[in-house]
Image (cartoon, rainbow, N blue to C red; front, side):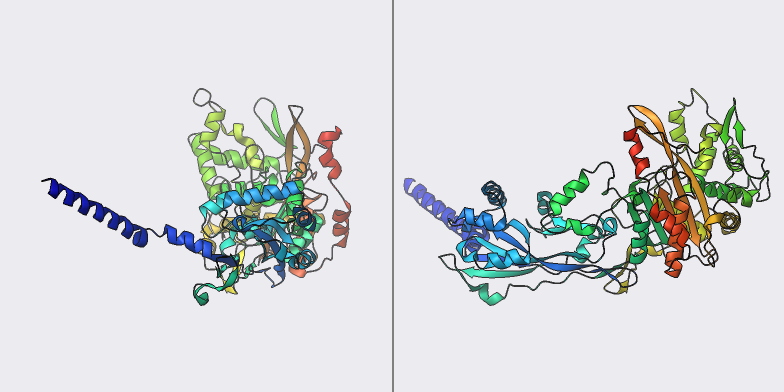
Length: 622
């Protein structure tokens, strides 16, 4: 029995050894990989990033050569750190931190020590690289901006962070990735595909040629060139008009939903975020919390829309059948309602029906229309929710779904919102409690892109394409369903004609009659919105915002535009002038109203923006 047990023990032990040997040699490849890592160096060949063109084929973004100093920590040999640091303008402490970071990332994989050398630095260092074993120079490309504007549209590229490396196997430490704007949104199109070279090393760690004659090597694939919908000349002109002002301009081609200009002010030259000073410049922009140049007001700023919103109440009133275009309402310098309260209005003829009501921006007219909308239903809750649903069909109060990452939903209040405010059912509320919605004040908030899209809907008489920036990829038009399917509103097309006529009369004999462009029929709407902030803990009213919407030509719209100018006094003073000039620039590519242009370019609002700090009084428009 003992002999049998001995044989069983020997056989079992033998099987265990054979099994382990089979596992190590056939199943487990980790040791082979370690051996391979020791014998083979992987070098990436970075592709050219895709170019970005404007809608007219003008090159906006190309590439320029760049050189990164890389290190493989395991391959480092003792070297003259003083000389090396002097060449690269580093301190020994900075170099030490970079090398420690590289070791933590991986002793065997390359890491960036100094990114983006200039050609001169590269040429000087290249001659001395033989002295610094473990270091090498990696060639790649940086962005070369052909324009000095549209930074918020284009975005920038910068080094990936560790989270991106962990989450996405395409990237390794030191790679560049698109940030913000088009660069981020279309990163996968623009970045291309990296090429890979496998270099065989001998036992002395010297390169001896391609591994297995390069059968595993791949060539880089250039990124795809894209065409965006921005008109570079219009974008540049808009940013010029917004110098020394704050706000946003969004212009859309109504027939396609393509964004013609997306302007935020103040902005910055995109070239500032290229090269070795990118981090320093970004830090300065980031900490400028007064001007906020990195804040895209066209997509993110939520403003009360003011009088342009009256067009929405006119359309809803017609659709709901609570008002006819011939119904007239009186205006005695405003609208009085409940316990001595009054919504003020400027002087104009009275009574008014719908078309002159829009042309003269009568608050009393639209207060009456709004009350009729809400009071059509048994409860104000039902009325406000019906009103809300109509507005949502215009893309208001929600993310539009445009192809940029940034965005805010704005706010279109509903019954749930007011029930919470007024503690319903403990206290009841009625249409007069929400009357400021009639004139685009109170709880209603819109972003400039939402207001521009709303204008495009009116220009189209009831439909829109989701606003977007991508136009073509490698010369082929986009076919993405999201941007090529019409969105219809809840308003019947015939109800738009009187509203369009009212907006047309804003220019012919209304609040923007001084802004007419000879030979171009424009429909527009002025707006002035109250502006509040907190100063020393107190809610303080500042100088009003200037707002304007417009589209042209009236019968064949080519452009729809919304302009917000913060602290701009009233609608026609700043925003109206800018909108008219932008329309003429786009349609004619030249300016005949040089008087308006000279006025805008020579006037600054910087003093207004300094008033919360200086303590000077604000101009309040009512």
